[in-house]
Length: 334
Ligand code: ADP
Image (tube, rainbow, N blue to C red; front, side, top):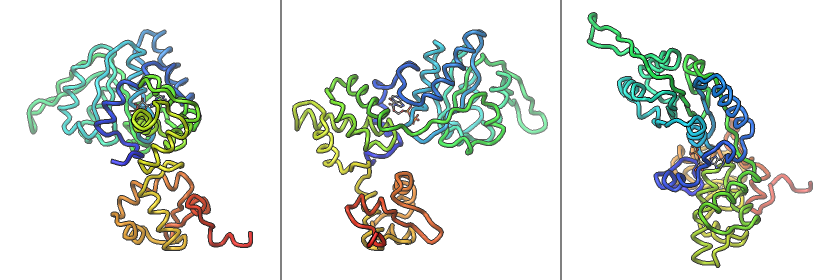
């Protein structure tokens, strides 16, 4: 898997456990969502009830799981974690729901991918803390209502719009996570380095932050690779030079592009003179599947302002030419 991918690998999951912020006050950035959650929790605490269900949306690696764990920690209760794709039958979900202790948190990642019958079971569970378990088949089937302990559901999804209306409406709180600024990512690198017990100077943290694509998970992953380099090839301190040498070795450039991202830009500018050119043509030029180019490379190239999708095909922006150290063709005489 690419170092710059936002999705978690098994290794990330293990490495991330130790460095997750455990309290709302330790969360860096996301000031808006953090303040909203803090209010929600305080309100519930004063009323002595469990808080409304929370839906957190945003791209992978921005802190949805972390915030769910923090909600449970701040409430002083346990958290059960599952994911939409893991719940295949409504019985799977009923089993989880009936096993929750009072006021516990249930975290469902990728909740938009939950199967329809399970989703319907979730409606009454969220609204009335009740599930109707169907016993028997055909005309003789009966629904037996089962009381649940009050619980708080934290759902995570990449985009709130992927949820069905009825499911979305049952959340009392919708928190939209944003990409992080370089300064926030720098603070995250410095905090994580402290936990990993490796020395880092501000310029070193800034160097990693700038290549992290606005995403804490990527910042932490790059930091782990830079740490190896600092300890094996340097004197153990992460400086700007150590970070940039290490990340050059791993093919992550100053903007956080990897080898394939750059190959796409080079094909676009070098071979096709900036476009417009079709996705398939680019894919062939870089020896990849069109899906990979479209789903793995393009979202960030577009977000970074390097590539534009137009009705006639993909186009390199002036920033793309500059990033490759080239002059845009129509900039002559400007
Ligand atoms: P998601 O569930 O959105 O994919 P995670 O909650 O698993 O993302 O976060 C990925 C990693 O990034 C975690 O290991 C966590 O330590 C780190 N992280 C995320 N958000 C923050 C933050 N606001 N401050 C510090 N670290 C963060």
